Image 1 (spheres, rainbow, N blue to C red):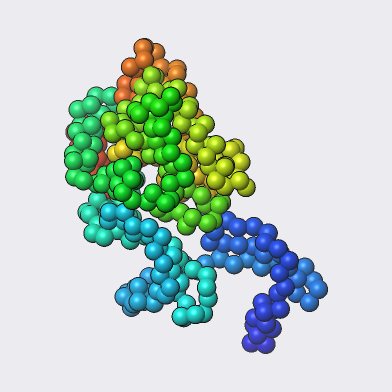
Image 2: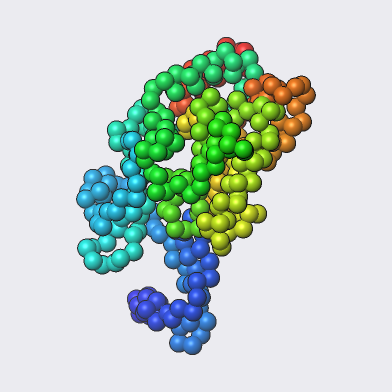
Length: 319
């Protein structure tokens, strides 16, 4: 008991010299300092959230100093604290709220097994393309069009590019991803949204788009390091998702130190640079593209494409 008390008494004696490291998306820090003139390292990591029903029932009621960072259609994001009123001016949490949410949102955020599937050009053309078209018809892109058309989040836009020589079909904009807290640079996450509406995913990209893609890459890197001068170009990763969360072409831009999750894993993330190289190496004319090749990627077992397309193909012995 005495040893435990003596150990607990050390923490208040810590004298900070400097921040040594920050990782896990800003959730863990290591401080260099001293205790009674002896060098010391103090690492602080936010504890896991409790999962017992009684605590979860009152969790939202314990939130304090909730500050809205933005709202677009059904999406809302905030900073908040869980301490007592006035206990700290520092937010503890980044909150994302989807209201009203859909069954697709519930599936996305629920734990589920994963499967590796291979999508042939035929499967894409005959089944997946039809599925994507249905998703686009359900109004799930309203929040994207709100940004592009200047109705929402205009104060957050980092950069707009009108396209090379003013070509409207090459215009795009750069803005923070709603999951980023807007301040932790090592967890930086931006989105580049193209303004044209006829390119739904990387499947629609062709050899004729390579010059445009190279132009976007260079402009994205220039705009990002200009906005955040402590970041250098070779500290950024640019990639597409397939299947993406929403079917309007967009590029993810993240800091290389952002904690890698399944969204950056092989089978989900497709590097912009590698995709450009792949397009350039395709045989055929300028209309040859990503729709002409096999794509292997991962799907959650609750995803409609698994339950409606790939599982029936597997069980039918056709794939």
